[in-house]
Each structure stands twice: as structure tokens, then as C-alpha cells.
Length: 566
Image (cartoon, rainbow, N blue to C red):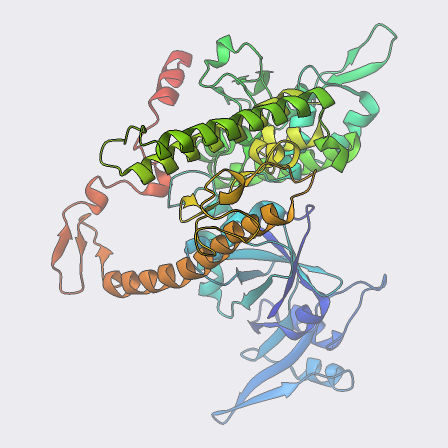
């Protein structure tokens, strides 16, 4: 089956929502035996379109397959003949029943570039017409919901289903075989929600805390309730997060939001770096470095210590907690968030003017022949490199001034600093200055004879004439700035198209070259003729998926475990 995909934060990472129409059409063959004869008869009696007393979907049977004298007959089940066929059902026949909750299916998004592009999910039959799955599973499929379609394959054999469940289930692929870290983790709203919940000494009224906790599946411990000076009961946000951590988890690491990297979590001046002791979040804020896809230290540790089932449980809990928290606290972004004070805007304008003056001075020095060339560079190349350095510094300066006035009470800054979405560069380009536009790593120099556009004098190699955009996105670009910006953007599009075809052909050649290599039981890598390619797989015999970010062992973890006497 194939249809458009939609997000559903309430599904487990292992589940996929399948539309009723598809569930009615796709079937699983079931062999009739003495053990399941009565159940099969009941399924056939239902016919092809059964519904429960409450009008909900229940699976029926589409076909019955029987062999008569070596001839295979496929009989369609209809409302009229269902009762009659059920009575005639015998051992050895096969019924093709419709999909039901819990069936194992393969789910795939093209292009299938790596192992995690096709994984096994459990069916959850849902209304409407799109496939649904948990947002944390987007990174391995590289999926988004702007109209992407995905494929679903229903496994027909018992062996295939067993193999898929053991080897291909989503939870078995949380750690990527590419870099030995988590490829499935919290994204966007999950990270923002957990950040809001754990930032500072967040106090959550008991009623709200209960609402968040009621969204979390498979809870094992509840947080401690406190009372304030007015007699009102509350729970610390950090304690709510601690309620889903395994009791034996001890770990410390710097948070993404920490403004003093690299810093020792114990001496963190902002108290944002994370310290977890025996399953309790003692200090720090939960952001991308803790639970994010590709970077989540906590997810990585839980999967290694508690296996894929422990990782699945934590992911299901933390994503629901993040969504519940962000829904409760509220989180919105508006265009006025890119507003900066008049004084800050004046400082940015002054900084850009100084940069332009410096560029004009460099050009004068170059024209007088007094410019010192850099080693191995011509005078022209030296001038261009110096100008690029000045324009880069101007943009950074504008970004720094804008950042100083955009604090953590600003939703856009929260998203960028916590790693949920975007970066401080995006924000500084919106509020401060877009900066130098480049084509092939150089300032823009192509166009008309001796000038980039007819709006400039011939021979002008100043900042504006060569693609420096002094405006911010919020203020709006001038027509010439807009044209240069489009040139930079066009290069990005062309580059993407060219890279895709090249990398596709490269992968095809690699697959054909390496397809007959395999790891033998003596740990050697050999081809089909038995010729040894490597004496030990990968020279070190380590499976990258089971390595710790590419290293064979995690020394820090072993030290902590020895200290604790584990």
C-alpha cells in the first residue's frame, strides 16, 4: 500500500497507523488448524466488512483458499456466502484475514539510502486516509509531512513476521550503525516541552503536573509533592522528568543551552549542565544534548544499559511528556520576537558602516599597490579574502548585538538554544544583518562587463556592489540585495540537484563492488570465492552500532560503575 503520511504523537515508536480502507484490502494468510478452527470460522462468519456494536473497525475475511484435486481455489467471501463458507471450513484451508492491531508490517520511505529506510512496525488501524507514525521516527526515514508518501508491505509468512519482529522492529534501530549514536530521538516540540519543564526551578501546580503525568504511559514512579507558603501543592518540573528515568541512571554532561562550553557540569556557572544521580535529575536543563535525535546522551545510555525495549519505553514516555508540557505551558512564535531596541539597531548600523569604510580602505590600499599579498596568493585573491573576512566579522557583530537583546524569554531563542529548531544565525539574520552572499565560496563577481549589475559604476568592487546584504530579513532587502541573495540561493538549489545524482551513482557503484563480501564465523571478511579481504571485520572487529560514538568502550561510564561498585 502507499499513501500520504501524517504525524501522530500518541502512537508508540513501534506503531504505524493504517487507514481502515487499507486494512480492509490488505490481508494476512492464516492456515486453518485444529487449534484455531473455531476462531477462523468466527472470522469468516463476520464477512468482508464487519463492524463492532459501537460501530468500530473489526477485521473480517476477504478470501478462502482451498485445494481440490491439486487445483487451488480462491473463493471470495461476501455477506451472502459468509455463513455457508464458515460451516464448510476445514483444517488445511487458508483464510485471508484483514489487518488487525498488532500485525507486523514493513514500512518504507524512498529513496532507501540506508538500513533504517525500511523498518518493521505494528499495525494500529485508524480512521481517515493517511498513514500515521510517531514524530521521533522521522529522522531515520528522512520524512516530513509536506506531502511525503510512504510504502507499507504486509508480510505473508510466519518466518518473515518472526524475522521482522526480532531484527527489523523500530526499537532495534534506535542506535545507528553509521555513527554508534541514537538516530531516533526527541525532535522539535518534544525538546521545547522538556526544556520548559526543566529550566530553572520550574514549579508546576499539582493539577497541571497530574495532567502531564496522565499522558505518560507505563509509569513506575511518581514525583514528590511539595507545599508552598500559601498552602498550594506543587511539583518541581525536574522531578516530573526524573519520574521516567531508570533508577540506576547516573550520568553528567554539558547541555546545549550552556553558554560556557566546554564546561564541567559540577562547576557549571549557569547550572544548566546536566547531573543525574540514581535516576534523579539533580541539576541542569533537558535539551537536544540530552534527548535529541543524533545527540541524545540519555537515550544512548538507556539503550545500552536497558536494551532496545528500555529505549522504546523511555522514548514513548519522554515524547508524550514533552508534548503534554508544551501544550500546558503554551508556546508561540511571532514576528515581533525579532524586534530589537532602537539603540541596538543603531549599533548594528554603525558596525556595518565601519565595515564598509574598512573595505573601501582596503580597496584604496590595493589600488595604490601597497597591499601585502598573503603567502601563495595573488594581490586580487588577497584583497577578496580580506574583504570576505571583514564582511564575515560584520555579520557576526550584528548577530552578537541582536543576541544580547534576545534573551531566553524569547520563544525563537528557546528553540535555537535548546536545539529544537533553527539556530542563532537564523535569528541574527532576521533581526540584525543577512551578510555576504557568496557563489562558489567567493563574492559575487559575474554579471555585466566590469560590474555585477547596471545599478553600480564600472569597476566598483565595494561591499554593496559585490553582494553584501546589510539589511535584515525583518527590515527587508533592497532590490539589488534581493537579486544577489537569489544568486546565492540558486547555487544552493543547483548544488543539491547535482550532489543527489552524483551520490546516487556513487552508491550504486559501491553496492555492486561490495555486494559479495560477508563476515564469516571466524571474523574474517571474505568474498564469495573465500578470498580474505580483512582478517578482522573493520580492522577492530567492532560493530559501529554497538560502539560508543565510534569508540569500542566508554571509559567514563566504566569508571562511574566501578566507583559505585556495580
